Image 1 (tube, rainbow over the protein chains, first blue to last red):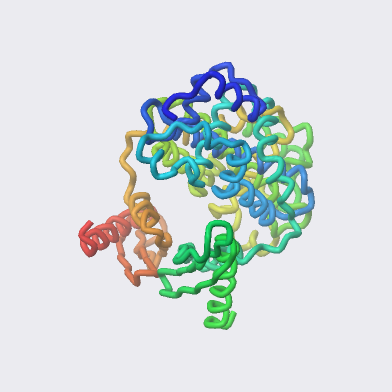
Image 2 (image 1 turned 60 degrees about the vertical axis):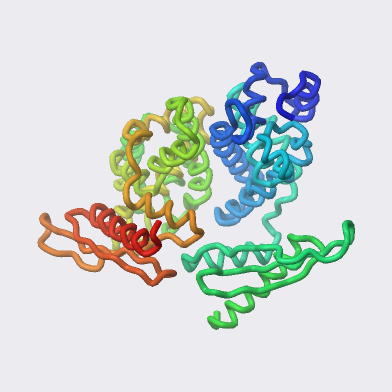
Length: 231
Length: 231
């Protein structure tokens, strides 16, 4: 799609639960840098900061007894690119994105980063269009399911623990890559590699979802690291 | 200091340009985790997000033509630990911090991280005590000098360029260490080392201020890296 119809804009605004006074602002928020016209990167910068702030505030109020390390982890679970892309999919944002030709052809509208960026840009656009309180309410509603899923008691998953282990030692983050997709359309499984380039270490695992395979590979890597280092 | 007198609280509030309805909130913001009583780490989490948001918004409005990469760099120059510690010093926050005995004895009240954290906690406390608009005005006033010093046209300094070069390659941040302090009290100079543990590379430089020596060491490291890699 290279323009958006009035009907489509109306549909999207119903889903977002917000009607823009300035429709151009909404269109800009949907415009990827590959497309013609003013793109959404500045709005994304603003929306990222806005989302980070309101999520911090919500968890601060909701969990008066958890420490700031747990608050940070809770927030990260909601504001990560993957989590925001998930929210964007629930709002069916991909139907409304304006992309350049090459991104359109390569399936850019389904990519996590493009979806998350557009959601952030829409948050920035609402922030500019509405009062602060109104914007806060609208954006918190988009995130409600993610916010409710975050629990201070959940043990950190293997990828998070691996990341924390590495960060505590000032080392770079692991890289995850799908190295093989096995099986047919609806019964696929994924062979995933977890790599620490700096240490020249790699582990592999297979799972029926990419994320599950990544978690398993991260768990194996943690075993390797804590085995090796005697931690 | 293990408690704060009423007179001191009044002085601090004059400096901050804000009078708290809830004085306990202000005291909590000044309480380091090493001290007895409720400490400031949760407020710091909140204030960090709040400052990040208002600084993003200010630069977004102030520089309508700069791209989001530049906006990020401008923001980083204001919200970095070092920059916030500088603001805390201008407000003479160190006179009002509540620290445990060992931090008190080891000069904790002059440490960048403790000062920056207390400033963030105070921002969080103002945010909880005031309306959003009021809190925004108060905190933006604290940061005014930093905000005004940030220019989209300033070339990135060597440390920033080194960091960006490494981040673009997914590598860990460099470590800077003072390895020697030369000369007497008021005519000191610093020998600083810049280390990339992952690449096992190090450079050294001397400067009359630690920061200047770090910049010089970073510049040498950039030369080494771009010389080696042919970038």
